[in-house]
Image (cartoon, rainbow, N blue to C red; front, side, top):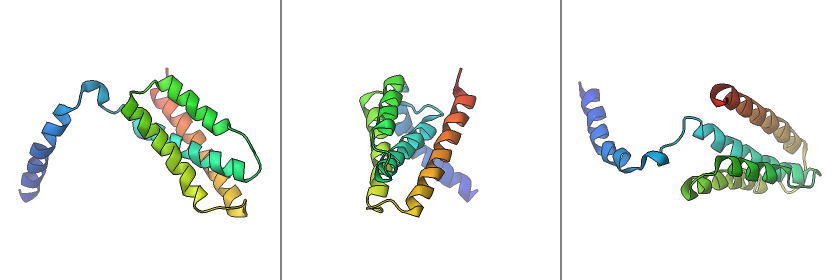
Length: 125
């Protein structure tokens, strides 16, 4: 009974916040997956450039994702923040290409592929 009271109290406090958001601002069910993909792309952008694959492939892919989603400014900022978080997390760790950096590239590439495939299978046309 105590749990139910606590849950009901939390709902009473949260309900006004949920109701005050415009309907268009509600997150799509795939939002978390897209934000994680953005973070993975930021990580790969840093790591691939660090390990000799100079270029903007992952930044360009992120720009294409933003163009396809055409998000409102708040949502766009979340995508960019996720990309930058991925980039900075490795920028603060690696100053040169190491075996662990190349392993991270491999793991993040696989994770990104799996996320993209899962999202496309679940929500694609």
